[in-house]
Each structure stands twice: as structure tokens, then as C-alpha cells.
Amino acid sequence: MRLEISPSSLGNVKYPCVSRACCPKGPRSFRMRSKISKVQGFKGANLLCDSQLISIFEATLSVLYSQWYGDEGQGLSFQNCVHAEFGIPRRNYLRRRMNNPTPNQPSTLAACCAVLVVGALLLAGTGCSEYNKIMKSTDLDYKYERALGFLDSNKCYGALPLLEEVVSLTRGTERSVDAQYNFAKAHRCVGDYYLARYYFKMFAKTFPNDPRAEEAQFESAVCSYLLSPKPSLDQLETEQAIEEFQLFMDRYPASTFRDSSQVMVDELRHKLEVKSFESAYTYYHTENYKSAVIAFENALKEYPDTPFREQMQWLIVDSYFQYAELSTERRKLERYNDTIEAFLTFVARYPESQYMAQAQNVHDRSVKAIDNLAANRPIE
Image: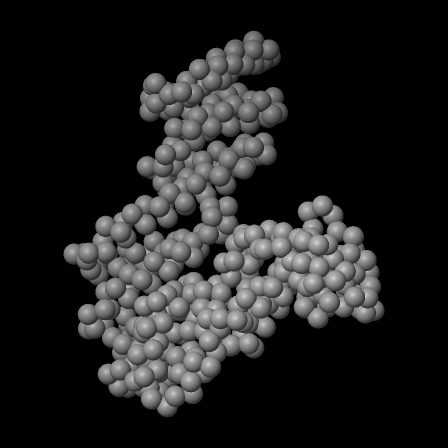
């Protein structure tokens, strides 16, 4: 099993000094503020064998070089790192750059040594032989028991391969039902929310009469909630999560998970409200006032209870006014009148608004502009 690592899964940690004995060409000591501590694979490091740890080191180093040296650091392996430091003629252009790092970039040698130190510490406590014995055992009951033990101890990476084997070899049996549910739990435990959602959903669909079907459907919705991105990104996952929670609450109206579901739905809806407001405000900020009016009005229709309602109503007034100001002479009168109409709607809804002074100023300027247009209009 090859464990993949993404920059988002890495945390911050300070490692001990690396001595000259480890790095004969490097400084006497080096404290690296690295990004290795929260690699998901390290949660179960005491269950990983050498080959798996090597995969972790290679992937970790690739991430580190990508972050330290930009695009030129993509694809470097530990071997490339050593080559670059000790002069073997590979990627010479990159070696020159890495051996003369900027103040924010640790030296190549320091990076190599840090990875070596972390690797030595992890390999010292792997306990590979014990885990290999479990994997090689032909006793499925024993494997399943150990998998549940790993899952209960939050050593989820150790539980996954065992549960996968148990699920594949017990299909159609009573044991398979429990194994499939725990297999879904293990995927959620390691943070693989896409697969966890899939397996929870399949469990609820395949075993609708199982007492855990309700919880499985709830967990599927929770996985979608956890996959929901920040408001500035596409909100397809957010909409899917809301839909799943609504389906769950409709199917289990008396569920003990109902309150939690409603809290998460409210949070997801707020995210959509923020997305809608920010999208409309982008038009306003870029002086595309006609589109801003349409976007703000659509947002108010779609989210009538949004906390941005008052601000959006004022921005509609100002967008109409700015649009009128930029219009041709023959269009100004109509658009100033639209501004006044939007102002009256705003005043009726928010008579004590914090934006009232600004709105009143826009109204007065619109009235004055209309009077000037009328005075300068030729008599027909």
C-alpha cells in the first residue's frame, strides 16, 4: 500500500538539531521548522513496514521541495536530494539553486538529514514483524478482532488493509455486515471522506433494516459536510451535503442526530449565502453595476433570511445610482428613477439602517440630477 501525502495534510513541528556527524558538509546544527508532523500515515507509524515508510519519505520530500523551491522542485526524490548535495551530475541547474537557498529555504543537505533523522526514529518503532504476522494469518476472526482493536485505538491505517481483506472474503455472511460498516468507519477515520461517504451510503442502501442504517446515512451526510470547501470555491459539495441532510431528516424525523444535522445544514447554508453575496459584490467592486443589481436581487430572492440582506439592499440602491451616472444622456432619467424607487424600497424595509445617511445622499443626488435633466431638456 502506497500512502500519498498532500500539502494540506502536513503540519508544523520543530525537529532536534542535526549534528555534523550526520551532515559532514553541513553546519554543526540545524533546526528545521518542517511540515511533517501531521502526515496522515504517521498516525499508524508503529504499524507500517519499511517499504511503506520509504513511500512516505519520498512523498514527504516531494512536498517539501515543491514548497521550498517552487515548480523546479517538483518530482525530486531522496536520491535526487543526495545527488544534488554531493555533486553527482544530475539536475545541475537545480543543484546550484538549492545549494544557494534564499533565507526562507533550508539547504538541501539540511532537508536530507532531517528526513533521515525522522526516518530513523520512525523505523525504530515500527513493529513490522508483529503486523506482518497479523497480515499473514489465515484466521479471519483473529484478523477482524485485531482490525477492530486498531480502529478503537485510532490506528486506522493499520485497520484498513485487514478490514478490506475481511470484507472481500466474507461477502454474503453475517460477519460481512459488521465488516462493511467498520470498513466505512476506517475510511472516515483516515480522512478519506469520498470513500467513506460511498461505503456508508452503500451500507444504508444494502442493509436498510440494519439498526446502523440510520447512523450510516447520517455519517454519509457528515462526510459530504466535511468535503464542503470554503465559500470562494465551487459549492457543489455543499449543496450535496444539504440535500443529504434533508433526506436524512425526512427519513428519520425522530432521529437523535436531527439536531446535529440541523446545525450543520445551517452552517452549510450560511456558506452558500456568503458565496452568493461575494459573487454579487464582485460585480459591484468591478463597476459592473447592471450585473451587480441582478446578482444582489437574485441573492435576496434565493436567501431571504441572509444576514447580508440589509447591506445588499443598500448596494442595490448604490448600484442603480452608479449605473445611472455612467449612462448616456438619454438613459439617465430612467435609471435615476430606478435609483429613487430602490431607495424607497430600502427605506421601507430598513428605516433605521446604518446605511441610511449614504442612501439619503444618493437619493438627493438622483433627484437633483433629474431636475437638471428636466431643465436642460429641449421643449418639444
